[in-house]
Image (tube, rainbow, N blue to C red; front, side, top):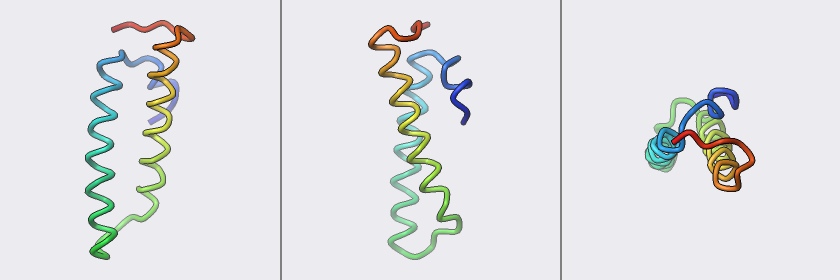
Length: 69
């Protein structure tokens, strides 16, 4: 997901997306442990997306950007 798209999302949408990404990351880690992971780069992309979502949430909290929800 692009940063511009994250900035347009509300706080509730970001929190929901963060929860979904954590669930997906957990599933991918299990697949990796069982050596059934089809796309290993998905782990990296998912971790980066989680970091970007957390940054957007922190910006909302600190008032750096306007929080819509």
